[in-house]
Length: 485
Ligand SMILES: [Zn+2]
Ligand SMILES: [Zn+2]
Image (tube, rainbow, N blue to C red):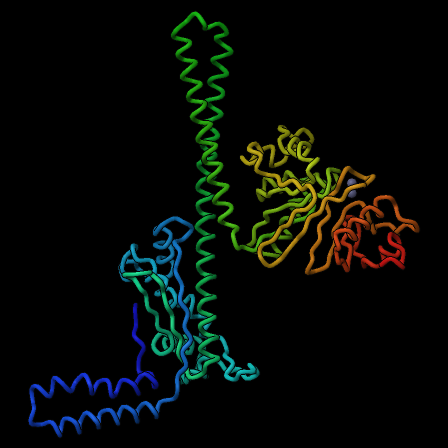
């Protein structure tokens, strides 16, 4: 895969005289008498290559280097899978023991080069004039059928523009050089390559973690069933043999059942931890969805989940912020836990109550999906993030700050969510715009207003759980008096 830089103008200028010097001593020793002619030829050779070099357009190189990490700590299995997906056999790139070469090969795959090839490039510094890359590279028939042009452009990128090198024997660093006749274009292509490589690498890591999590969760299901069976066996034994102190055989049997139970418990605990780790890897660097509030019931939640998926496809719902414990805000949490395996972000005082809501089984009103198929996290206590004062959710781009508002008559502390970039403040049951705002602020409005001021939240809109969004200033007119803010 390693490719040397080829017929570059500036490199050729230096290469001419150097070749003459290297050639000279050898020729001197063999053909001493032809010295004059030899010198003449060597000189002419240098001159010719200099002319060739000057005739070629100048080329500009942009380069970057990186050190490939093994995929999610899974060694080279992951890389083999990665290679398989892009049609590279690991044998062709030096075997799975040399993953850096695989990454060098990845750069020249269609998956990474395709998006670059169909792009336009800015040929001036200001970036105002853009031409298709095919045209810029002078691909013949650049106005032909797109698939043909794409093919030729990818080929030209591989052949003339991109070269990769791997320090396979030493550091394993992969270096990539991009050479075109425009410095801006070289830089832009290099950036796109790095970007494509990163994205691809991340996708693979996540897909693997997801695959791994599904596998572990499958095993966890079986392990739980075995644990339950062991529990049942011990229970049956204890019920039927109330007095076994006098019987060595029964004592022995009891010991065996207890050891079996302890072992099963250990397996379940270990697998639970592993599934949690895989889950964390899966969402690392991924945009994830946070839903605020799961009101009413399962039906409502499932409908909301379906709509969220339609609106933002291919991203997992990982957090559910629940403002407080009233049924019109909490009734649907079981569905989120069962369906999406969310982590519930809640006010710290509510932890016990929510835990109870989630563990109630059977669900007497109407058996919901949680009652029918309880996920393992509920029992293990992995489902909650309690908020004392502040909790921040972020995926690296979007930020949601969650605050615990105190001094409310409605409930002992309620969560509100603030999106600093969007300047939205989301609250429940403090400002309900289903009704007109009161002339004088309620106690809760005042507490809420003070909290927002103290936290220096720069909201432009309030988004109530009950009602439509209103401008923050409309609320300030009621709660803060028009002078203070
Ligand atoms: Zn309420
Ligand atoms: Zn409410």
